[in-house]
Length: 113
Length: 367
Image 1 (tube, chains in turn blue, green):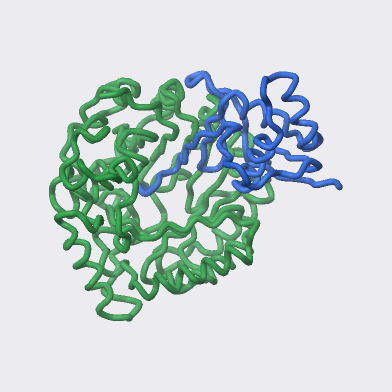
Image 2 (cartoon, helix red, strand yellow):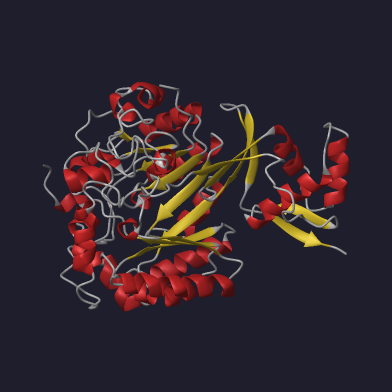
């Protein structure tokens, strides 16, 4: 138990992806994995993504993106909706953020061509 | 000192009672000193205080948490407070009825320990017939729609079967597998010689895990290597009193589950609110940050990466909790670890010495 410990806390926003990193396809329809829970933490005043043995603290953009991952909206539609709410939304950054969360198994994807 | 962050996780050790007798158990040797357990109301108060302090992950553990008759009520309390609630269990006591009650109480995730891939070895290591019941409980967990983690403590006597162990986890439909090499605290420290694997065993296991990861892309396989073979120490607990805390069955709050062994003043949730313990107690402030560090940690570029390693291991090996973790190849006391590793590699025989099983707390006299 005393190695890394159970709560593997990380932080995530929409801008950690370096240029050239993998991006989720525009047609993909990401949904939160069934074992995860997105909720607001009053103590920190931030949204958090909770899963088995993991905590991801989200910045406001990251939380807004995940709230839109309902398994019905495509990546392109998610970007469009974000543009109505935030300034300077870059599709590449959002798609890279989503790809990271797919790699971490936080998001599941149904790709309808 | 800058204010430490809010903790993310609480390891709630509800009881040290356990039907298993694993010789690698990290519970303290003086189990009988913890028989005066917190009440249901105590635990609910501790959980409320933990949530107010920022805790988001609740790990119901032990011992065997299902030995507590009130585990469903405690799980419900954690869930209602908004914590992601994990049950860390041997699966003994996880009947269909109990599982359904826990599901209804909002428990989010179940982690089942497995000792080996086949009944004879598994039951020998667990010290009780348990293999078949674990498999049955794992089926129940999946039928009720929970995510399932299979946790396997690896050591000299089962690490050569890691491939078969992963195949068992696949059959049990595990979503996650934690292959955690033994950490030498409590009973595992007592049995270290019989548990520490050889370097050849570790190298073979790593190759097998690599192949199985490719074969099972849908399973998250976490492989924790033994720190005795590492160049640098583990970032124990993500830093002393930085991310999580433990509450022992008797209500003692600890920065790490092994910290009860350290000669530091106790901090009991029976006497103080958890927030005061977290922010102000001498125990939780003893090794926070970097001010306590000796050389070579103090001037080391990795001091914010591994935090000087594990305080409990430093104390266990050197008698001084503020020494650099002897696992580090730069530590002045590194020979203490290097010597144990040399002994472990003198023979390739899988079994060296007898394993002394951990007893049930009721069969021990208090110290």
